Image (cartoon, rainbow, N blue to C red; front, side, top):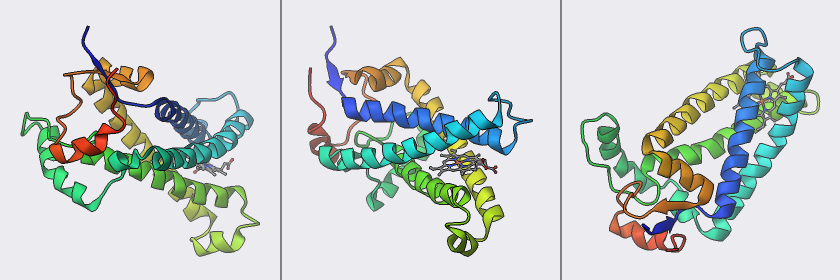
Length: 215
Ligand code: HEM
């Protein structure tokens, strides 16, 4: 039997699915809250709002714990988008546009993945700022006014929702494109040796080593 690489640790996998579920719930309930006629996804407004209000706290805990875990497990070394990662984009774009057939070399995650995962943390933060301003309009009245007023904040919250919808759809599409091994690795943690997600360049191999154990 082919050896398997331990790719995603248990806490990383649990947090991945918790955060994914919360983003799913916040997006679907949010669309219903915005326009129940065109997005009839829930039985009534009361249920949709209750779910949104529970999931909004859970996503904040989920992201904060994920960042904390990144720090203690040191996996931020593979996940954090750094300035030098910009160098990886030309090859990645050529690959995604089918100009080049070679998968670009990168660490555990390529430049696009890192940028997206980091951007999601920032986007959740922005959703929390705009969302809590809508939630506590009186207590945060000064802040809401400074940010342009409730209408602007509501529109901003809605626009960011579409950024989530597009980027999550892209993430799911690329994961499926990677095949069952990629999806399975986020459930079991293991990835078959030889079926590398992407060629690992030498300079990051050392960095990635600490979390990749042979089983
Ligand atoms: C992270 C913390 C978040 C907080 C504190 C928050 C809070 C809120 C609040 C208070 C409302 C208004 C509800 C109402 O009027 O009944 C709302 C609406 C909404 N939320 Fe969130 N939310 C958060 C995250 C998200 C996320 C991650 C998404 C989607 C990815 C999302 C999508 C929406 C949408 C689409 C609406 C409807 C906006 C509209 O009516 O124009 N929210 N949110």
